[in-house]
Amino acid sequence: MGRGMLLAVAAAALSGLAMTFQGTFNSVLGKRVDVPGMVMVVQVTGLGAGLLAYLVWGRPRKLAGLAGAPWYSLLGGILGVAIIAGVAYALARTGIALGVSVILTAQLATGVVVDHFGLFGVEKVPASWVRLVGAALMVVGTRLMVWRPPG
Image (cartoon, rainbow, N blue to C red; front, side, top):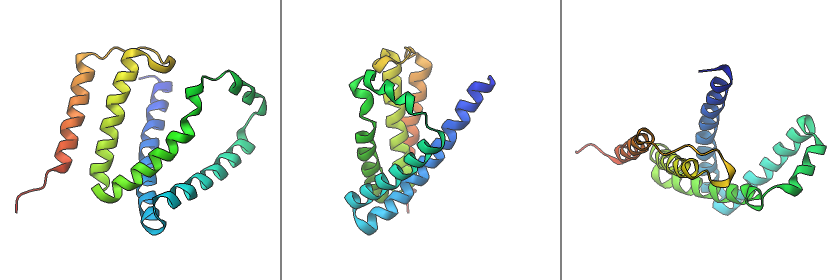
């Protein structure tokens, strides 16, 4: 594995770690202020962090590319609201391990479809039998998260 790929995998792993903590923290906050209130607080704090990051590292001239961006590429913020609310709602009711398992399985299955068809301009990566077995193993693993020992 090359250095660039290793760095990308490490970034993905750290993002997964952060997503689990984010879902957990949001679930706790959602129980205190309700899910819509939690979503608003998270989005406002995210806006603050985003503005700070932009001020530190941003390049205003790059925003000109926004005009040529496909319409669906602007849906990230809306999807973010749905994701934050859905994760907090689900994790509060399923527990962290099961909720994260379902989320990851759904992400993986969706990723296989997006890759296979090259949707939204991503590079096509065929859904080989190996990838399909990997996705099926995620489903099995998620099912195991539901299992409770007898007694």
